[in-house]
Amino acid sequence: MLFIDFSSAFNTIIPLQLIHKLVELGLNNSLCNWLLDFLTERPQAVWVSSNTSSTITLNTWAPQGCVLSPLLFTLLTHDCTPSHNSNLFKFADDMTVVGLISNRDETNYRSEVSCLAGWCSDNNLSLNVEKMKEIVVDFRRAHTQHVPLTINGASVERVSSTKFLGVHITEDLSWTDNTAALVKKSQQRLYFLHIMYTFYRGTIESILTSCITVWYGACNASCRKTLQRIVRAAEKIIGVSLPSLQEIYRIRLTRKALCIAGDPIHPSHSFFSLLPSGRRLQSLQARTSRLKDSFIHQAVRKLNSLPNLPPPPPTPVPLLPQAPLNYEPQNTISILCMYVLYMWKN
Image (cartoon, rainbow, N blue to C red; front, side, top):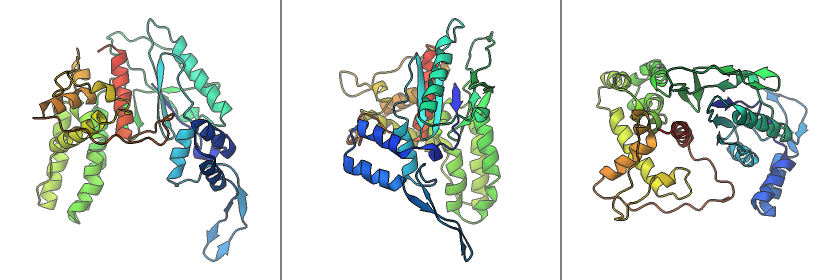
């Protein structure tokens, strides 16, 4: 897995190039002209106390902090697609290349990375190779040594663990490092709980349950006990009963599974296939506990454990059928992990 890092991604967007791609996606001229007007001829000045600098006019990049910028960047990169037996996982300006290396043949993987570098050059995007990380997932007992990956003359650092969309991913796809990071960050904020219960929900529970549907099901008992100790410590400080992480996971897993099962355009929707009776989903086979405990398998089993499958929610109408937008970070991470596990054929 190669975790891509762009140098000032939003600052390198060329408006005319973006508008050309939006026209190819089928956006009407009025919307394209509005976006072009929004991105060009933008006056900017610096104001300090009562002093104001001279105004300059900008005709490049999308504004930082603007909710529209990640969407525009996603649309700009919609045509960045894999050309070999690999895959690209994109969430705004975060991108990951996942390639399968079999029989020690890295040709396709390295060619994919080379094509990506070429695409970035053609689209005015600069790769920050110094901050890029590579993880080799190898579950075999005897690991193969791989030649360091080189991009634009610079070597990519190979690591055993890295942070992707707020979640620590390791080379063995275990969640021990992620658990330790969550516990450490939560412990640093426990003192907030002396103020009010809502601080717990906003500052600690939000950390402990970040993308919980992705990783909690595959956590071992030790990791779960370590995380739950944070909740118990918070209960003693606040003096009220708090929902356990197991209960939060159960509720969110059910809700997310229902959303995916009822969304035909979701990338993981094909895993939720009804049996001919229409009352249960088709069970997924897994030869390893690692795959069995992954999100999709847990979600299917959870829906099958319900007394009756509830009716699916209304199907959302996508704004751009040609370029489906990203959903949530946990969806991106769960699909990435599932893709790696399935490449190993269970």
